[in-house]
Length: 169
Image (tube, rainbow, N blue to C red; front, side):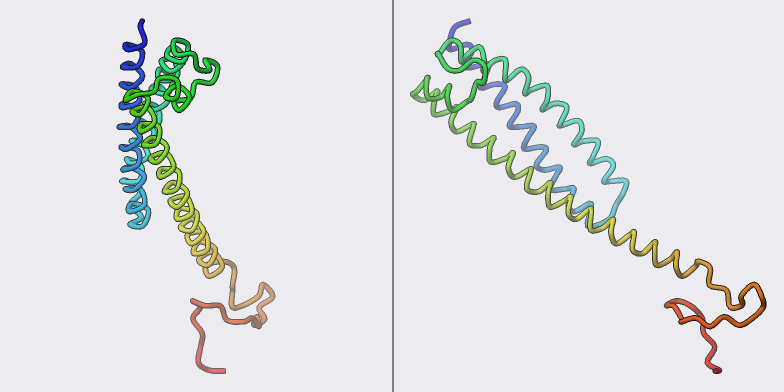
């Protein structure tokens, strides 16, 4: 293949990858709303969609990397670790500028996905901590707090929240 065909193939893979990353970004944004609404069914569906997008990205990444290696070999860039910016520097002109702008767009979308994903993780961890706290409070309220000990004596204990207490003392 000549340089022009390899370039077109690489750009095509980069465009596909950028589309999938943008879709993933939309899913991560939607995930925040779902987490706030605590809708488990929607969260499961969203997670399935995210898994599908990640599988597509892995596949696209492999073919893009292969195309980048082939183009790097033709233009004289590093084949072992082909980088878009290095290839763009070797190509120059409008083709090189297009690779630089695609690199910038991919970098921006990937960083945005990472940032939102970290925020969603913190939100999910906070929700889990709240649920665990509520479960522990429920457990202590419903746990062993008999009025009488096994010997039949009145048990003197501090009143816990949620217990019914007689007004007579």
